Image 1 (cartoon, rainbow, N blue to C red):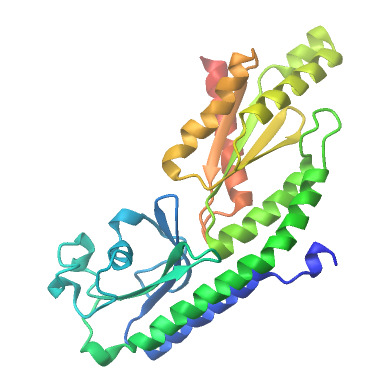
Image 2: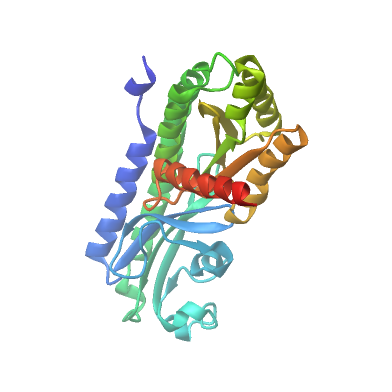
Length: 313
């Protein structure tokens, strides 16, 4: 069975999450519902029924949320945040008056995110929301997530192996076709599960001059040395590819926004230490807002700005 014929857990989880938030919007007085992911210090809303408060792709620091308080033992159903001892001091309590939240766990039993709902009006009473029903839906989403991750594991392993087998003859790195397969996999994980993914584009400075002055054999050797440096610098969550010509790309997984710049700067620094000048740009994805392809476009544009700045200095 080919990877494409295997069950797609990401699609199954996305469909289940959307049905849950749509149902809760229709059958509770809470208007905005979300299935969110918590990763790399942020909460991102992945699957939402939005009527003004919880928008698709919205990212907030996890420490600043109602949901972290719920996860740490505060009330799971809040009739009026301004009158609730667990939430009254929260800055958002001036706007978010009603709150419902339940944790979602992954296939290893670890915290994945939350099923949560918010409203601008206080709830009429404790029976306004069926707590057992919302808890059941949270548990079912945890079960669906576990099954989806397990279903995806074998399929993704086959897809990644296929991507990594597509290599560039000169450098041995993943080639353009393999990169496109890696992007497809990352896009699926970003949109369904909110996995943190970012892209960097690295362009060697002066390759044309080397080719013109020293010959193409010297240019090829420069590309091989650059590939070796990038490979040696890459971390466990990085995928490095030769996109074409003198352009390389890095796909990074599971990094918080605050670590992206120092993480990607390491590649340019390592190249410089090896005597290779390069320009770099990077951009993060955002579930439902910035796709992996769009992050690549932004990173590429930033790289060109960096290259122009370098020529001007």
